[in-house]
Length: 380
Image (cartoon, rainbow, N blue to C red; front, side):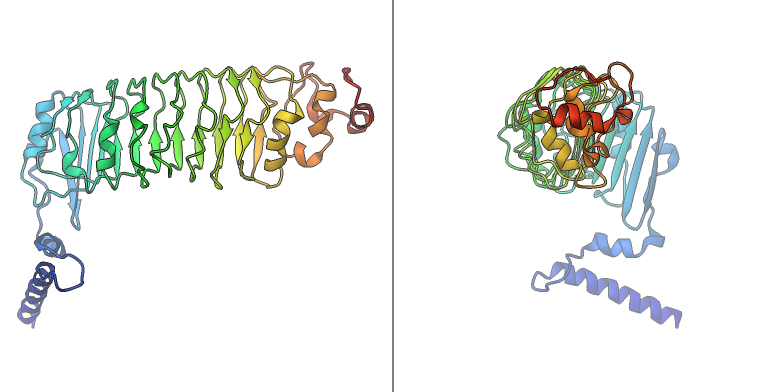
């Protein structure tokens, strides 16, 4: 019985291989590699651990993972990737805390990966075609913590499956290479934090319209072009904290996404916000403007539309009047203090004289400010 089962299983594999080579059969593109995967117990996925040192290798069910720590020379990675593996279409390559040097066009040999993470690995440059073998497979590429200075953005459209690109802490000072590229609709996550960016080109995000996560924190941005985020129709999280932005002109925060959840604008140097800065804000958006230098003026014509929008949904809030932004306890705060639906969604702190905003007398505000529109004096 056991022999008969083995013969049947082998015939089944042969049938799968034949199906994969017959273009007239509308079925999955089975190949010899796929038939090998089915016999997982007989596969040796990784070379000997002695040969792999200082890397490790693991594999199962057709997936191979290579992880390396502490590589001291790029030739070591060359040796690891040139070792014999059962097949070249592998799953993940992780290299951390290493000194790899330049990436040339042959560094992957004939291997392909779905995920490549070369983080803090001493990579100084990326040669043309360095990742070309992975054009049809690569989904996640992370190069954070390497002193690159530049990145070949013009090569990105060749990677049709790319979903996430990590370029944090790579000393980038310019991302204009994204401008005028064809749209990359699969790109969902772009990490550009902790770089040297001082400005954003007007049309920089037209090539990545489906970004859901955009991280521009810890740069040196001084302004935002009007409408720069409008092309991002699926944006959910935007991080702009720890930049040097002083002024938000009209259109700085115009959005077209219906699912915006987080805008982090903490620790900038914001002193002035013009009317009509905010548009297209979702009810559940959480805005954080704390730790800025807005001083004591929070006019309704600037912040009213934003607060009105987020107050329609229990999950939305805006943190403007917090640490670093202290209003005078006068009629300038009456517009939101006297409206409980607004007050519930504004993370409030204290006035300039340390009075808790939640302790202000609403009746007095209504009488002195709302009913008497000419009143401007301090009430506490």
